[in-house]
Length: 185
Image (tube, rainbow, N blue to C red):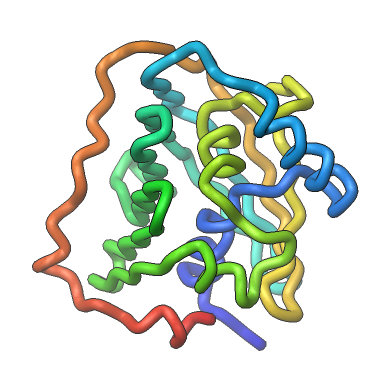
């Protein structure tokens, strides 16, 4: 199955939630429940994400903002600091806004997990976006299966700032066309 670059990057951003191999993911998911962060907000600016599939390789600057146990925003800026893709997530759903094509889609974690392996959940996504991976590394290498396609994501974290003001306001979706998530899944 072939995807255009933006859909692949969108899928990759949505699956920023596994740690290496499936074995590592199971270990990571078990340790997430046990670790309780001591911060309320987290901001990581200038992280670098590279997404590699069989046919494409895309690199972009990424900003991640988290309000613990409430909401997070992943902003993808592949060129000149312009936000091209934005993912807003809560413990219940994920909204992806493709600003290039003027589209957005919403999905629950259950809907996303129909094609994703390993599965995605709020706790893992929050931990990844706040650089609190169980490995404690400043670099994360993630492998994910999206249907039959393998997606590799490498994130080089920049220093994180804790308990600073973050702007996780929802973008009004009125100016974008809603796309049925089943089109991508």
